Length: 58
Image 1 (cartoon, rainbow, N blue to C red):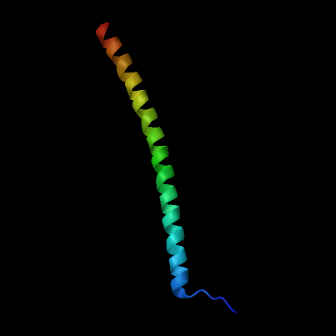
Image 2 (image 1 turned 30 degrees about the vertical axis):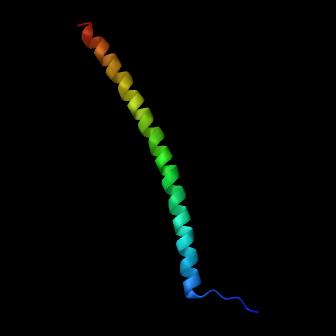
Image 3 (image 1 turned 45 degrees about the vertical axis):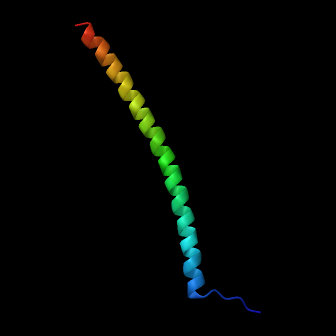
């Protein structure tokens, strides 16, 4: 018995692969962006705290 992939099977397999790749990429990208934004926010908080201290001394 010969197994063959039809065009529909190929397109369906590619669609499933694309959906899984998109999902993993989205989740890892979101986590990376969250960490990056968290670091940026922490840096801005540190700078604004330092700026408030130096302004109150003047």
